[in-house]
Every structure is written in structure tokens, then in C-alpha cells.
Image (cartoon, rainbow, N blue to C red):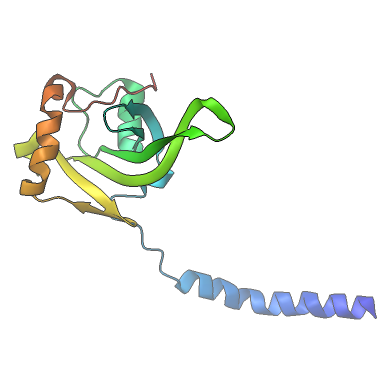
Length: 163
């Protein structure tokens, strides 16, 4: 009897498998236009004492390749650098450690020398869910003003730790 049940289950699985594949293929797998920062690699980290925040700075494949090759002055077009920000808090079981607290934002710089020529070749944006919403020129102005002191480093504060 167990053999009959097992055989029946195997037959059912084999019969229904193609329908599962067809359903899986029919589902759209929309990729965000600028990629998904959660899948990117770490370029660096920073702790902003003035803002009481911790940041992981990650890059898309173009930015990671440039950092590994030491070709970041200037960063190549197509580079996207994301800053993932959290508030800081003390580790609940290790008082000496500061760890990420509440997530606050994910922001980005997108390198396109022609499109963003007025802001040093960088566009600025913020992720809303899985969509990177690029800021218009007026909303980008404070971001670019903050990055002006880093002109000699192609307006990027992050010191890539990949070399």
C-alpha cells in the first residue's frame, strides 16, 4: 500500500511539474531600473558622530570593479554608490559596541557625466521601496553642495576598502 501511495505521489508531481514551470515563467520579474542596492557589495563604512548614524556604502558592479582597480578619480559612468543609513544604538548584550539601530534611508549617487554635468557628473537619488527616485536639480542642490569639498575625489567621500 505504501508503494502505491508513493507511486501515485511521484506520478502527480511529474504530471504537474510542467504547469509549475509555465506558471513560474509567466510571472514578471521586474528589475529596478538602477538595480537593487541590497544585492551590492560593500565599498566602505562610516560613522557620523554629528548625525548619530551608521552607514554602509555599497556599489553596483561598475563601482565595485572601479574600486578594485583603483580607478575612482574619476569614477566611471555607470557607477552607482548607495549609502544605507541607520541610527546608532548600543548593543544590548555588549555595552562597548555600537550597532545599527533603526533604518533611516537609502540614498544614491549615479555617475553619468553627460546627464548630470551640472553636478560634477553625479545625479542624486533616494530609494522608495525598490525604486530609486532621482532628485530634480533643485532637490539635488543641497546634496551636491555637501559633496563640493570632495571635488578632488570626484565628489565622493567614501574611501573604498577593496584595493
